[in-house]
Length: 520
Image 1 (cartoon, helix red, strand yellow):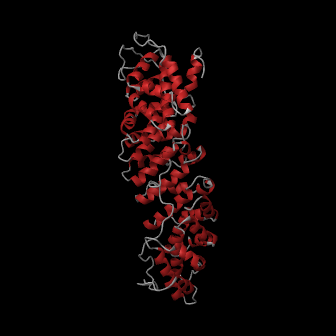
Image 2 (cartoon, helix red, strand yellow):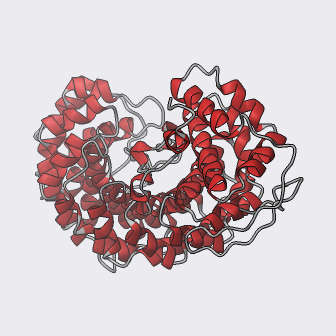
Image 3 (cartoon, rainbow, N blue to C red):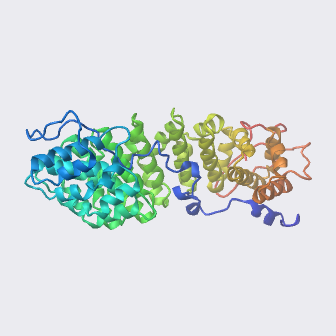
């Protein structure tokens, strides 16, 4: 640690002095708790459990009992009689459509996959082709090993070909199967993309398309945008952006939700990808969806907006200009804690910006709900609100920091010094050091130190000097050494007002300072 006679150096040691562009936290750099929760994310694979026939062809008749063994079913699927083949394939499909414990492994071991892939070529027998595609859809909805079996047997190329089927039901089933395959992970996703699935999927979206078909297409498109290690080829995905902007005006909630999920995946990347999304003019539509009462739509829309404000100043300004801040403020009071957490994370990336962006946050009256999150929110949301506060103290003006203290942030912010998560403790320590550093420049270091002591935070700082984490105890020791030792706090006189930068801020230091009276 620097010596006592190097005050400025010592203060710089624990100052949170990173550039605002670097302070923005992309999702992969944020806390683990902020990462996508399975319960909030869309399903990557789905089995088709619908037992209603999609073809009215009289050839398809539901059998009431299954009397075949698996070996007999496979032999029947290989029969020269197509009626027998249809009945056997339909029986397999019904077994795989059971809600609980579908016999996927048993079917694979019996050799059903290559049999059904062969039937995908039966353009002359639409019902048989359809049932075979349905069987493959449900097998591909299983584990990665099961999905890989479908891929390795050569299904992808044939399913892509069926996207052009004259039967919309066959095409829809092919879409669903490809969606399950793409949802298996980056390798499977990229294999579907390299087989030219994307342009054909986009061609299927026509004005007269049924809602159920559209839902399946958009869900499959979202899976083709999904996963980031590595992300999909943006060149292959980019043609979908023009479709997504049209889909954001759709009234169907499922279509809206999966469109927003796709955009959330695409926006979770570098600034050039964020810019490509901005260039479509899609931001006002996304911001409008922040008012959605449907959590299934609101969650991915909020996530997308949050990803965009991790970009550069101009990209963040586009979100601010579209009117997002009041909506984000409202979402800090949402009934679902996960929404509150995501909103606080988005705001933390805006307060990591320049002074003008911080001013917009304050003008939108977001300080009060941020304090409420620190006071009443669940722990994950509190951590994100703490980041929002610390980022503000790093890039804000003297006036901004004064308004932050006046909003009553200190007691609830300092409560997080008791956190078991040392990363959160460091965030709070950095915020406090920024506040004290600014107060010192304005000659009000003593008053702020008294205020921090009166709310019990000094005791917490002293306890942190024995913390097991080196950064925590070094930062807490540096704070105490710089601002809480050898200070005469008994007599506090009136100081001459000072001007910091371009701020014409006037203040009177009181003998008994409080948060609502304290001004830098």
